[in-house]
Structures are given as structure tokens and as C-alpha cells.
Image (tube, rainbow over all chains, first blue to last red; front, side):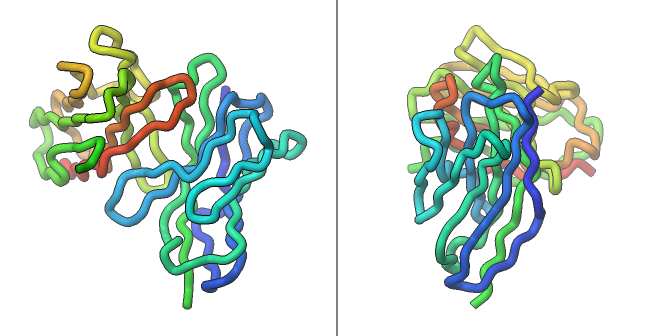
Length: 114
Length: 112
């Protein structure tokens, strides 16, 4: 069964520092991998999506993620954090036999300090 | 205007009451979804619908029912609310097949 693990429920960085949010999926390669962001009191918004076209995926707001099959990882990065990046981030994978079903990780709350 | 809207945004109810959460989307999507979010657990799928006549259970459907009144509308009902159904509920719509799901702003439900 597909599953996804996000390491670190809270991550704190200084403004301008590198952001690294970790996501590992179960050993069977899922068809699709996603990163969603949830700003306070809002719904989830897609940051980026992996669909096997390219291993390095660029998303909105300067975020990118790299699919690494050997490490079963899909970590999210941003070279320089902004205060506006403070939010909760969710990694999700789709089930192999039913790509409508998304399995979400437990989320990582990112804090950005001035 | 928002593409996916949910009403109400906040609701307080008592144990045993029946309540309905409503969702509408203007994106013309066939697929619609209901999730609940609990702190530390992420989002879990309650029900999803491929179209008006095709409704499917998700991971945690017990205690919930849904109705797809039209392509644009998908409502979630709690037949007899219990305190452990206190959560943040999200509706989403999408094209399916791994395409992006678009989420509403959420309904915060408190069951006393």
C-alpha cells in the first residue's frame, strides 16, 4: 500500500536561509507525487507535482522538489526563505490502482524568523 | 470568486445531531472529494465522487454519508454527530487521473 512520511512536524529557518522539507514514500513508485501548501485559515494549494516527466520539478513561489527513486524521496526545497513562506506543507502520493485517491503525509509546519 | 466554496465555514453542534456540510465548485470538474484534517494526522479521504451517479468510500467513511446533487455540488452529512468527528473538513474538486485537486477553504466543525 502506498504511504508517505514527512520527517519533522516543525521546521524553523531564518529569512534568507535554505528551506528543506523532507518527504519519503513507500517503496513502490507511485504514479504521482505532490506538495501542497496550507496558509493559515485557508485550504490547500498545489505547489508542485511529479508525473515522471522530469525528476526535478519546479513549482510556484520558488519551490522545487527532486524525485529520487533510489532514496524513495521527494524533498521540497527553496534556496532563500521569505516570511510569507510560513505555512504548513503536505506531501501526498497517489495510489497506483486509483490515482484519484491521494495519501497525505502528516504535514510540516514551517516557521520563518526575521 | 473562489472556485471551490464551502458552507458553513464554522459550525458548532451537539452530540447526536444531524448536520450537513455543503460544497460547490465552478471549475466544471467531474470529480469531487471530501477530506477531514486532524492535527498531526494530515488529510484523510472520506468520500469521493467520479460523477453524479458514482460515489465511492474513502479511508474513513464510517459515520458519514454524501450526496452529489449536481456536477457542481457535493454535500457531506454526519447522521449522528459524535465528539471525535470534531475536525477541519475540506472539499476538493479535480479532473482525476492524477490531476491537481483544488481545495475549498474548509469547514471547522466542533461537536460538543
